[in-house]
Length: 122
Image (cartoon, rainbow, N blue to C red; front, side, top):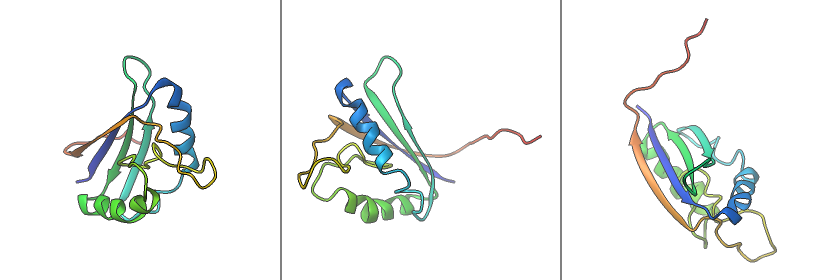
């Protein structure tokens, strides 16, 4: 079964737009990765300042290969945004200077998918 990585990013209110813009600028960056199955950026609606970055992978090995390849290259010299895009800490803003991270904290949660459901087709 698949594995899920959820990166909980603590994002101050004044940085929300920055974080979302950085993720939007990297749209398509993970989709071609071997073993990649799904991505979602979840914006908090109430009661928290944490965005959730949800990625689903065929295996832990596929996720680790992405982390050591494309993800690592995208974050050289900056703080990791973690699983699923990492746009919390980089993205095409400014000249040659690396922009400051939009997230003030990051925690990655790992899960195995043990059960799933999809809508029934008519």
